[in-house]
Image (cartoon, rainbow, N blue to C red):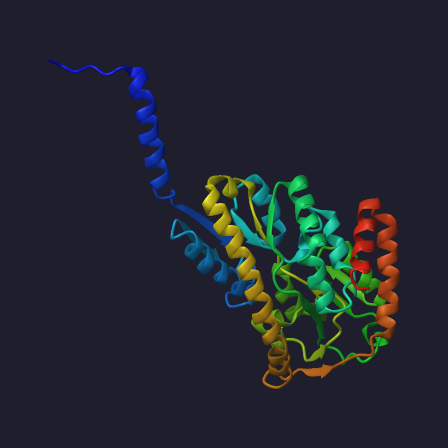
Length: 334
């Protein structure tokens, strides 16, 4: 006799089997394309490669990260909007290039805003940085996964050594398209010329500009020491390289994969801080010796005085949210 089963009895049993199968099924494989604009082997490559290694490890291989250097996915100027549109998954963007899309970032761009590296990491890796990331996500839908290493922008030029602020007067200097950085160099007495990163090497080679500032490692990785002979350890701007993820790619991950991505970003950021911190003085030594650059350590008193006015001017103009963030940053140094 054919046995017939009640649908009412079979339904819960079948549901339990399906749930068990789903729980034990491996996570769907996801490919993440991670880009940055700098050269392969640059400081951004250190962060990207470590994130790739850790994301694949912590996800049990269900995440495959494809690292794309050298603006293969987008330029830095394009990347933020591309992630908002979902056409780029992840990107490492120099923090000053985030400001046109999220103006609150300019608080971290202000000259001499951090009094020390300890102050910078206290701000970024503590409650202030966490609140900032939440606000950015609320306003832009992008996920700031790690701030990475905080370095200094060293100044270089092909005209003369810099010992005091008077030595930069009138120099045509490439700056990113960032209002804080433009205003700062104007306050220092230079002639800033805003240019995209991709145009910087050509502008330096042709003499359209005679100097620029970059993170120490980029002066080496981009071989700017072959163009400019003078290196000034000015440390007027700090820089960091946040790793961002689009809402689209985070939405493709299951809970375990999202946790793996966040863990990988946190650990990669810590590795990046340690590794790049170790490298900086080695790189400065290379630039002054093998690179043939004349190094100076300028008197910063006039630079700091001019920078303080830039800080105050921007705090007054940017609104209460910006002013409150500046006050929190300053208070964290006390």
